Image (tube, rainbow, N blue to C red; front, side, top):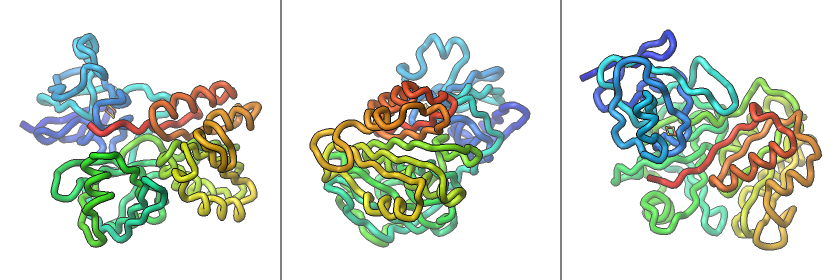
Amino acid sequence: MSATVTVGDTTVACAPEQTVLDALLRSGVWMPNSSNQGTCGTCKIRVRSGAVDHRTSPEATLPATERDAGFALACQATPCGDTVVERPRTDDGRDRDATHALRDLVGTVTEVRDIAHDTRRMLLTLDTPLEFSAGQYVELTVPGTGVRRQYSLANTPGEAKLLELHVRRRPGGVASDRWAFGTVAVGDRVDVTGPFGDFTFDAESTGPMVLLAGGTGLAPMKSIVRQALSLDPRREIVLYHGVRTAEDLYDSGFFRELEAQHPGFRFVACLSRESGGDREGYAPDAFVEDVASAKEYTGYICGSEAFVDSAVKACKRRRMSPRRIRREKFTPAT
Ligand code: FES
């Protein structure tokens, strides 16, 4: 049975089996979202009238007490008839009216290259351009499997037909190990859905920026940094890339070139398990050592859950306003 979902003064149609989040995003109606897997809680809505089927919403993210109180996960729940929902509050207090509409596209793999000992860069060319904001991600359907995996975009919105993805190998993984490090070939046709996520560059912000990236959390930062410098080539920006050893580093040459072109941009490679790079130790610690007060800064953080938690603490310790801290946690594939 088809249904409608209403949020604020906007009503959209929702097909059978379509989630609340999917229906809203495909209509260009913004709803906070991050993991799109039921694991982060970012899309937790309150159902004001009507009812939803919670389907596979995990108890860890949506406990029974919250279901009973009328909460639901928009990325998992499907409406049972016409339903009115309320948007959740966001971490940074931002509210937006519109987003780039979610779309299904097809791309062709045009390049696969090893860039670190367990990381590959994959380039795809889309048949039709994708509109997105710097920092967002797409879902790829691994050819021949139906398995979907999420990858942040390292290209800029100006390169709308190109997708640059950084893929870290996960031993035994269907997407990374068996496909991206196994059977993938130039010319593969791949289904792509996007864009997703609220980890986006704030084009209206001014003042200095700090970006803290753990591992392949560098991908969205590559997009954000270039977008920021295209708007203000002299903006004060520092990017910390945290990895374990020198063989995990990649794209350092690219960022060194940006340093040479932009006097306000600085790149700091941090190695936590050996000496070398620019700094020895954890990236958030290097930031705390370097910056006495981050009151005027806007922060962007992306990486594993542990990395993001530690980097958020570092930003708060240096008195960055929580409203100015944007973050993206990589969640393990479900
Ligand atoms: S739980 Fe729905 S976007 Fe994370």
